[in-house]
Structure formats: structure tokens, C-alpha cells
Length: 461
Ligand SMILES: Cc1ncc(COP(=O)(O)O)c(C=O)c1O
Image (spheres, rainbow, N blue to C red):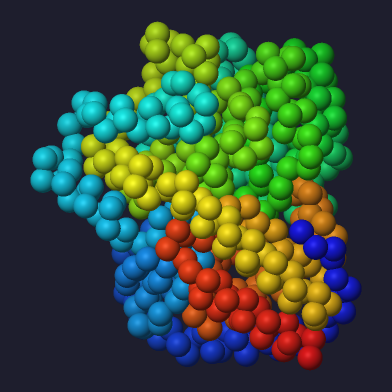
């Protein structure tokens, strides 16, 4: 991570460029506009998930191959969005395709375990250092079940999360996300606020948030909750925040959290839905050498199929084993999903693949930092494994409050438009980071950097 540059951005120029780039994107996505007219009649908002909404219309995709996607207008783009970080294997990987085809011919669903389910659990146990596993179909199911397991194991209701972190769309974790800066509250008494409507206040009140990268604040809050007879069942957190761009843990933070939770008998859940498999073979758990009690996985796990998993210690997972907790689901361990996952883990996400991702990450973050220095932009590049971003901020972002206070939303919006108009498919939204795939090449990285250089020169030049 480089030192931050000097903020010297002409805001009128930023808005002028945004308007110009919006017009250009509208002009090159006419078929998406037409598709939206049709979609809107039967799909609410024209999309399958609200995270796909976009004004004036979403960009509808047609196909993907390796590191490239094509939209319905035929625009060919390097894919840096990669399905919200799910396609670290690249699109239509032949090894995963072969496994799916082979499995399809033998039947795709029994709601009875297959050998692939065992092989995947063995490999995940090896990677994450946690012996016991179960499956789900999404990240939300994984975090929902992990929290239930923690509650059953401890006999407590309150849970603790990191302010601003996203852990899926079930009620317990749709709390204290996307909050406006002036509503965040005191670091020692952060607000518990529902994220959108339809979440019962009684559930919101059970979720207590603390700032990221501040172990002392976490411990103070835990002690207060204990004094109020509301000791948390678990702390659920991402080891590196992946929904404010990328916010890495400060040195010693994760170990301190591990020590605090162990000392108080609180289950530590690392939500590795984004980090797991994407930043190292054994995710954040391996990368930073801190083992939680439970790990949640999804996204990249299934190589493009809807797979999720929960891994845990023998002790905590005993409540699943002995039937105290019903960890269930018709499609859990679906044969197609576990066949794809097995191929992904054994044939695609190999040690060489992780070395390749690390090298690409080094190349892209170094080159982006050089652009930032060259033009004196307010920001820095940050990355780990396949994940990274340029954070437009004159200050280092360490948690949600610093993100809200300093991140430049307009520059993030402009960068997205610039990318989309120049063959770089990026995740929409100021909070999002890139995901590289094992099929990305230096050419893709260099194109990304060239677009960033062009943006910087138009902004500053
Ligand atoms: C860290 C984290 N946990 C959980 C989820 C929920 O996953 P899903 O969308 O598969 O339910 C997400 C999704 O973005 C996530 O980023």
C-alpha cells in the first residue's frame, strides 16, 4: 500500500466526466436498454437480485469464457467483477465443465450424500484446519446456520458483528450496514440499525456492532454486554473487510480478536464467503494464521454453481453432529455442486493458481500505485490474492467510519464508468473490489492499468 497522494481534484471536472461517460455507456448498451424494457414487465426491477439493479438500466450479459465476458450488445470485456467474486476459476473452465457433464449423466440430485461430498469436506478440512463440515447453497445460508450453531453451542442469543460488514440477507446480519456517517454513533456504542425494511426490531436489537480493526473496542463492548447479562454467542466477521473495497486487518488485530473471544468463551466465526478460496488455498484463515471456531464459505466454492459450506471445530460442530441443531436443506451437498467443487479444488485452484493470482495482484497494485503517484491522486491500491481495489481516499480506510468519512464516491463512480466504456467489466457500486481469476493474464492487468492511467490523466491533466 502506498502513501496517499495530494487531493487536488476539480469536482466540476469529475462531474463533467461522469456525465460524458454516462452518455457513452448509454450509447453502447442499447440492447441492454431494450432487454430492460422486456425484463421489467416480469422481473421486479428487471433483475434477479436487487444487487443487480442499475440506473438507467442493468447491463445484461450473454456469455463468458475464461477472463472475458460479452454483454448483449456484443461488448467484449475483461471480467474484473467475476460474479461478485465467485468466478476466481474464470468462466466455463473445462475441468469444471467436464465434472458437471459427467455428473449430469449420472443424475444430479438425490438428497442423499455422494462420495464427492466427502472428498470436498476432506479437502476443505485440510485447507482451513477445521475438521468438520456441512453444506449449504449460498453465503447467506452459511452465515445463518453458523450463527444458529453458535447460539445453540453457547445457549446465548446476542451476536456481535463488525459495523458496516455484509454477511448475507437474513435478518440477524442485515444490521448496521450502509449507514450514513452521522448515524454511525460512538465507537463504543455503535448503532444497531436495520438494513432495509421487513426486519423485526427484536432481531435487530440482538445484533451488536463494533468497529473493525479495534480489538480494544470489541473487548470493552463484550464486557459491557456481559455486565448487562447479554454476553454474545459469537463474533461474526470477515478477516479482511471486502465490502468497503478491501480493508486489511492491521497487524495483530485478528490474533487479538481470537484471544478475546477465546477468553470469554465466544464462538469466533470468520465469514470467508468472499475471502475463502480467493486470497489463499485456505482463505484468510491460512493467510493470517488465525483459526476461528467456524468458517463460512460460498461464492467461489462452487466454481459457478450455488454451493456454500460451514466448517468448524469438533467441539462447536458437536451440536450439529448430535442433532441439537437442525442444519438442513434439500439441496445441501447437491451432487452437481459438489462435483464442480471437487474439480475446482483439486484441478483448478492449485498451488500454481494461487502463485499466479499473487503475482497478478502484485502487478496490478504496484502499477495502480504508480499511476496514483504520477498524477498525485488521493488514494492507494490495496490487494490480497485475487481481490483488490483502488481506494479513492486521502486517508487510509481502516473501518466503516473512516470509509464513510473519506472515500470519494464520485471518483469511484467515474472509475466504474470509465472501465465499462473501455472493456473492463467491474462490479457496480462504490464499495466493490475487483476479483481476478486464474485465467487472467498480464495483458488483462495491463489493460486495466492503462484505463486507470487514462482516467487519471483526464482528471488531473
Ligand atoms: C462476506 C459475505 N458473506 C455472506 C454473503 C452472502 O452470500 P450470498 O449472496 O451467496 O447469500 C456475502 C455476499 O456478498 C458476503 O460478501
